[in-house]
Image (cartoon, rainbow, N blue to C red; front, side, top):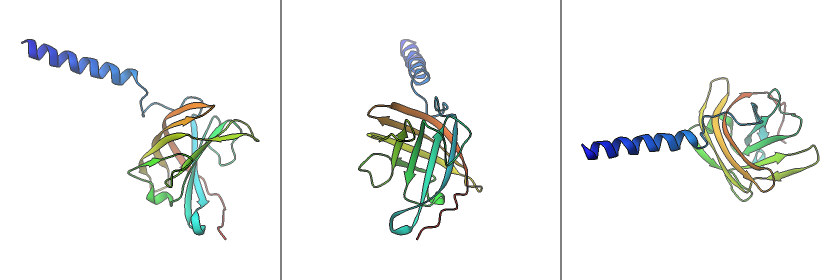
Length: 151
């Protein structure tokens, strides 16, 4: 009986800790909207940008906003954890505090759970910026045509 009680208590404590921690399923505070779009990648190949914004999802948002860059086509994002930092070959993220000021994430990652047939990207991020601090939570970035043509 004592073992059963200890196991039950451990489960309750684990659930409480999980509920109290930052969840990847919570929306991103201050960035309720998101958008995904095509970008030019290395050697003029495809890349994807995801914008986390405080206003309606746009590829030209007003500051503050976060821009995530991954050097692969949107169809290749799904089912992966993408490391995001200044020196990561997998991608990077920038916090734009104003139209003239931005900083790159010191560390972080993006988990892409799914990419829909309409190219909507569903996932979550955890980013640490030197001055802006932490940005974390879930997003569903609708696809916006960019009109970008790589040379």
